[in-house]
Image 1 (tube, rainbow, N blue to C red):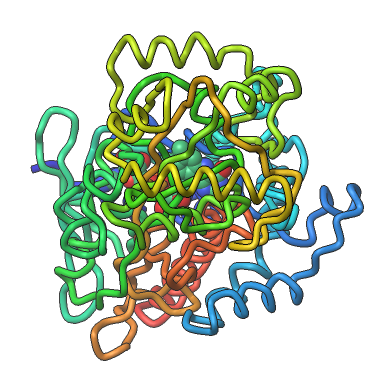
Image 2: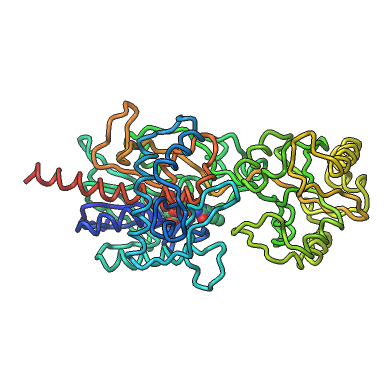
Length: 487
Ligand SMILES: Cc1cc2nc3c(=O)[nH]c(=O)nc-3n(C[C@H](O)[C@H](O)[C@H](O)COP(=O)(O)OP(=O)(O)OC[C@H]3O[C@@H](n4cnc5c(N)ncnc54)[C@H](O)[C@@H]3O)c2cc1C
């Protein structure tokens, strides 16, 4: 067994771990970072950017949301069923964290909304190829990794942590396995756990949430994010929290039909398996709310249906409700993608020459669907008595061809696992602090209650970065105290 020694071990190099390690290394702690993957950044490599409140970028763009207002909206939204102190620490720190990242060399394209009713808190990282879209944040993670190395921290890739060591109540080390399979024991006095939850672990999703992967949950799976951190923390006495998924709906179709999927996220007719409307389709732009609505339906499926005239409208005019994730500026590819899906026999992306055929292909109740389409077309001429949908989005379905995409709950990953307090100190089942143990990011994120707070976008990466930074800072305070007691 190899032996190493340092002050602080940070388990994982996603945004939370990188923030923790940088914050501690800046204060001259000797830091070792263990990362299971061959690269740093975790799930955030796929994302676009974190939340920030009262940043310079916002001030210069005349975006006026204050920390107090953000906190009030957050707590109203969660009905105060979450740790208000932790939420406050995070939101109030988030502006300075954007400055901190900029100080390292991270560049942001600006502060953006996700959908019209949200606030412009989403600080999207300036993409290296110029086009704002998925993966923009990967540049930020590279800058943070470089900075960490400049500060002299040791980053061990392909070196998963296996066990946290606790003796006489205190944290004393970590066991890990290196690239060659050799065991390493690292002696240290503090540990930050930040392994990103269990989004890649269908068994834990089934055990701890209301969802079942592949049945009513079609979530992203970031390889290796399988709940290691929380299991290690629970083994040394950490309390469990409530669990959830960071839901955002998607189509279960695995096909590469980006334009078709984006068009079917527009607020057109959407029905359940019984052939009935169940939501004001305007809600589809808030991916959390629509995912919640899907969860209450049979099989958790919804079906977005359009016809030729609607499709041709989008091809001519572009989508009504734009978002920066699908960032569809042209719908020209719709016909080719739809044809490819028909050729492939994709059960979730279907075209038909009549409502009856559409019902037969999808399993939607045929008679009800015909009735719903007739009622919907009538509403398009007057008003939507059922859900009061904005008249701008009431487009009738007349054929001759109809197109349908199945939608189901999806998620960016899991939420919750390790109980922390507002200093990110891990708590045991009696709510006592475990000396020297900290957790950050998704492993410890329970601040959203039952629904992701999408009205303030950038929230999970924001929480990961800020809780990580807090964990690094508090761990150093703990170490200074401990060393002075032992001197
Ligand atoms: C497609 C996509 C887009 C997203 N876009 C955004 C966005 O724009 N804004 C936003 O706020 N959020 C976004 N998110 C969510 C955000 O990326 C996550 O909330 C965030 O990355 C969580 O950070 P983390 O550090 O807690 O965990 P992760 O980023 O999941 O990192 C966990 C790390 O732990 C490592 N690990 C696991 N087990 C071990 C072990 N035993 N030892 C060592 N290392 C281990 C993993 O390899 C991984 O590198 C997005 C997520 C996805 C999937």
